[in-house]
Length: 416
Ligand SMILES: [Zn+2]
View 1 (cartoon, rainbow, N blue to C red):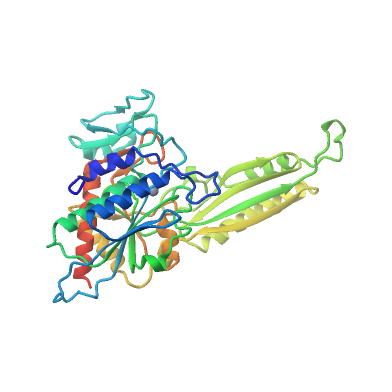
View 2 (view 1 turned 180 degrees about the vertical axis):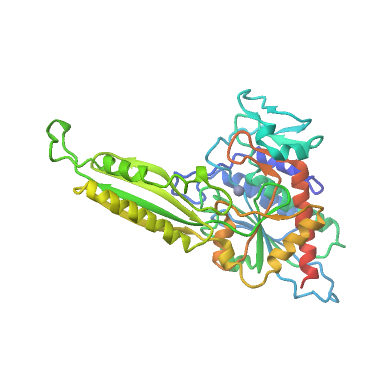
């Protein structure tokens, strides 16, 4: 175990079912996540890390203590750096009996053996062409692969091993955390930032090699409730107030050019995504997303204007709008010490990559950690097509991520 490759580790982790669940009142949302979390506790101890712990919520933490000699100028000055990955996989696709397929990619489309209808197409996967002649990992087509984020877990473990095996690679204190329930938006719900004790942290939970993330959406959820009145349709004339008709008039007015399916890059959106109800009452959940946090207010105003327009069409229906804060763009809270970003960019360069900063059209665990005071940008893993059976992992990309993390520890010493 001590000298495994990132790939060997990844295969072991991928086979363990750790799917999280939206329909759960427990934390973590599924007990099976402990199968991997507990395994990692053992492996961290075997690697020789210090302070290896798992708490009741499933958070696994450990320390790789600084190896800076007493005489080193940065000794005691190098910030404590956190490395974070999540163990759970998305509820959107099965994570049971994952059969990782390790193949040398030779070009063209990849038909997966467990389900010939599942094809990883070269035309839809521009990253494939960077992997011709290289090793990639897919599922058998009946499950997701779980590179999101078991690749991140394997990368952190392998980077720790590399630093332990090469004492000439100087680093400060590194804190490691493996977390549950990221995919159901609860990865940091009980995460104790103070106890973790890092000054800066990185999630290893991105995708394309070289891509780094320091910006996420700011996010609110809007909930529109329409209250109508139900009565037997046979005697409904002049009495029934069908809330569904009111809601339909609201939905049809939502701007089609401010939708996830028509926007990209830094563009905001309004996304109606869950509709429930009957004549008497119905509710619509809507995602409001903008990189510019004050822009969320603009999106809310658009909903208010739609409601104002619909109200006179249905005078007997009562329409309510509620806004729930979700998460904020990490950029707003990244702080003044830009080394957290400079060091990761330099580390990716030293790993031989051309780093690019890509805005994430979503949130990460780092969005919440950054907002709570622990600046936490995101680093690529080499995975692609998350949350479905066409997910695949570039082993080259995963190794580049290991290299980036190893370099990152050293760059921090130089910049301290
Ligand atoms: Zn992830």
